[in-house]
Image (cartoon, rainbow, N blue to C red):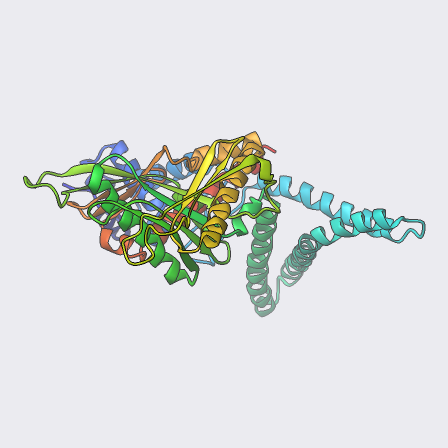
Length: 454
């Protein structure tokens, strides 16, 4: 008997005895529970069934798995990206640590306000202190809201205690207490997120690079599918998608394709798409109907400019050559194609997409800046930041992150264990959020878990 998400949840909703699940090993149940944990819609449905059920064995397995995955959370209320009201129940230890940080912020804010009121400050001292004070402003506002909620909770508890004989008053106060407690949790979570380390690059635009790997022409055709998948996803998100360079194969697949994607928080949303995307399908060149495995590498780089990266003219070697275009009166008649080599790093970027040498040079410099900025950014990351990336997947293009199996209509992300059987929707950019949101959730949870050890 095959174990499915629906089957497992049917057991829970019906409250069937645990003996009905003896056909399944603990590892099979763990595997199914892992799949549900990282699927927000299934997660919410599963959680509702779980706490209605009388199946102690499944409940204990689920609690055990959640604690292994996310030890910082109590299991009473589950985090779910599909339900904005379902905030995580933060552990007592985590709240204590957070309160210490909040008190430190309040003290620092008060110190800076006193410091800025001193008449003998130099312009430089005033500017530095005022800049730091502005950075604290949002956190201080949230802390003020949290303290107000906590005071409200204290007063409502006092009302409930003092009105033992007035049931109507007690009920009203209890209802208000419930709402105030929800507000307290909301501000606690917002403050916790504000305290987590941030990647400054998350708000940047990005450069997308897709390259065919092992698999010959089939890899090139799949590279085209992946490149177009991100284009459709970008359109769906309202982002600007600009093709910078495409190198076609003999069958009109893409040996290499580069695009610039612009919009709010683009890099932060797409950064975990970097890696090896593997495809299993019957190639168009296959006569015997056999399934082949091919691979495509994807790189997502935060965009940068020459203000972020120091580019010295003496470090750049620029070559021009005739574009290998598709024909016409302009093809191969001018040296419009550009190849720029950054001599210290050995990085080379070639662009022949435009007829104008000037435009090709600008595009090449844009890509080169992104590559150099990414190298510098990664080298400056702390060991803790690197560890968090390793827990999800480093984003290295040499790491296999996802498999697209066409015969089964299946897409599996190997980092979070999510599988969907809507491969066509994924390649149309429709179901890509299922993977992206799970990866971002995992990153957030890992960051929260590491918060207690910092």
